[in-house]
Image 1 (cartoon, rainbow, N blue to C red):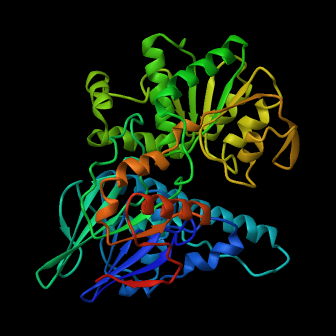
Image 2 (image 1 turned 45 degrees about the vertical axis):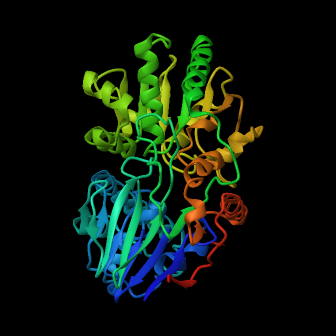
Image 3 (image 1 turned 30 degrees about the vertical axis):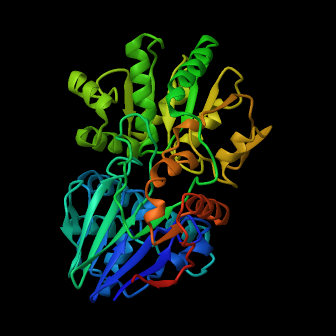
Length: 466
């Protein structure tokens, strides 16, 4: 019997985890963390579709925490099998999972200190040590290399173009001499985005597909215009004597922005000025990017061959890890660019740079990523007159520029391009990794393209694959 059990990212965006059962083997496709309010997701993050010790292996699509972040919990609860991933994904997990463990520890310490009245203590979901104990379980598999994932079942990683090392997973199950083929998309990337290769096309013909739908209901700005927009906004700010503050996710977005800046400097279209990347995780992630030119597109490979570095580490970009060096940026008065995490401005060093710069009209905050509801980043996007940072209200006088073309997720047109040749040949498609509106949009798109059986599974749904 071959069966799919949907657990995480079913009718929601986070917590990706889907279980493939075949001939007694249980293979987990991803093992991601549920994200949201602590009280709502704690129980979800501690639960699994089966006892962890009964899962034979994990096949990991990419390193983002909503796809990889519960692997330390899985290991801590008794999982003893291998975790298969591309080499770049393994290296990114080597820095991102311990960073996540550190956040779990700090979060628990903060709340336990706050509850000094003797209330129930909060334990971290996992620790840095738990995260580090997970990495040795990871096995690196190159793209387009077939590997076994149980009796009569093999898998292949296919370029997804989402972040460094991201992959779709092609699964081929042999049933009495007949092949059953399943494609799990993980998170699909975009076309013509700098540094990374495009998603593989055409997609392989398969019987079943599990697809994400994060942006199935919208169109992004053209990514090829983002470099020009970035140049224009920075030039205008520098001409007025201001600073540019960019909240950016540490993995992917930071490296893309730096790549564009280096190109603008080299082309002479932007006058060189100091660039500071103020984030230990961004610094480490950039080092991982530099190790994996096999993931680069043709243009990036050519530049890497000529210069040996895409990210300005020996030039105008200063990567900051030390806290005192970070604080020193607050005293700089000359025009500069400061990039820092977190991407949604909810925590981290970006808060200090916003606090020190948003009340000056000459400065600019450039928003280069999605800002979820109820975050400081969303309030900046909405251009609230005042914003709260560290418990104090600040007037938002700085210019706010929004560049939506940097998204790393495919939009409706890119889904149409990828799925157009495939949809009519599908026996069934399963839509995950999105809220109700996005899932409904993907179902409609797939039906328009000719797939007659499109399912939006709920958590716990088990589906037999015939």
